[in-house]
Amino acid sequence: MTRPTQFDPEKPPLEHFAAYADGELRGDDLIRLEEWLCAHPEDAVLVEAQQQPSSLCRRSAPPEPTEADWTAAFEKIEIGLASSPPVPAGRSKGWRASTGFKVAMLATAAAAVVAVVLYSERWGVRAIDSDQPADGALAKDQASPGPENEILEEDLAYLWDPAIPILLLSPEDVDILSLDGADDSAIVVGTPPVGKTFSLVSPGDVVLRSAAADVDGVVPEMRVPPGPAAVPMIIAPMIGSNSDQKKP
Amino acid sequence: MAVGTARTLPVQTDDQLLARWAAGDREALEELFQRYRLVAYRVACRLLGNEADALDAVQDGFIKVLTHLPGFQGRSSFKTWLLRVVSNAALDFGRQRRRRDSLSLDGLLAAEREIPHTFLDPALRLERADLRQLLNQALATLSEAQRRTFVLHADAELSYREVAEVLEISIGTVMSRLFYARQKLRAFLAERMP
Image (tube, rainbow over all chains, first blue to last red; front, side, top):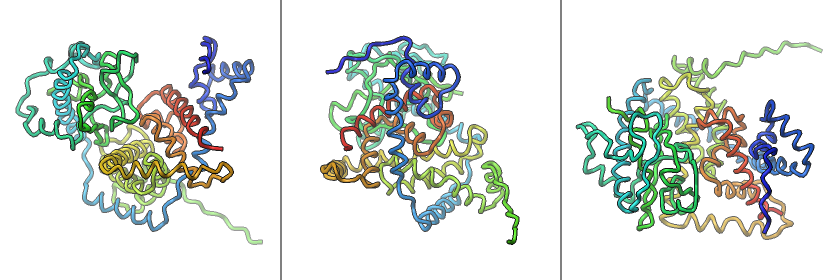
């Protein structure tokens, strides 16, 4: 078993080796890294290691479609555009606001159930860009649902239908602040379906940055696989963390 | 020897082409498509791990971007926005495919069967397709965020700044994701390549 490399405060951050390999390091960082490499030539392997996968990528570019494929694709785009008139600038935002709120409501409902299942006492993601209370910012702080925003029965059915995705956060929506061994019973932020690569974090370990759909209307989603192990995967406190979700 | 003067038409910017298309010029759209179809296809292909759905992802991406154009203009370049949308579409297709595969398990089993026999003989030269398949499998070991960052940089040849713009993350995060993605890729590949 190899011993971990001793931490050297003078050593440039590892990601600078990647940036150096790509010719993206500038200024003082560049000087510092070059000086380090002069003094520690053995670390040149870190730079070389960064170059290999990119080089393989260039050598294995996928075969280009034929011109006939491109033509067919272009025709489909034209047909698609003809049947989807341009969305005016204002509509996207409106959609985000109403959908964002609905997402928040759905997620809250899901989270409440999850919280019960997990018996978690540690809910409380620090909300940012929000005038809502940061701690325990769950359903209790949410305004009563109005006619536009009330949770319909079909929405609840939607939450529990294992065949239908549940709207969720993507890893890009949160900053992970810490991870430790006690996090294994907490929530999942990661790529569905659970069972492959994912990160386990507890609510206190993340800062929620956004909870709205992407500009292209794609909302991160997660499917609940069958079985009791499927439960601990929903990040709850979407409430009050995004200005789009506030009631007008 | 006759000397001719080459006449080159000035290359129009994306904004100019978009303006022409908005005014009803079909050729402008075709030019935009030709300008970015390959890079979009490469990104979609690599994120999906196959070519079958990649063209669909590219089509979806173009349609989404162009139908939402009025709400987006000025926020970033057309190219970075297109790649953001195409990569989202590709990841979506990938998720749908995984769901289909997980229902039957056929896809997963087939994927497992696909690699090893090719590399049993270390003297066998890696063909381009084999290399691509191997790289796709290596990419599948990365998190979605790492994979996307790597593909946008390596396949789309975007600068760190452009990758940061596409993913709406900091350049520091791009650096970090690339470093760890490539470490992981290298470790995976080292075990399987002669």
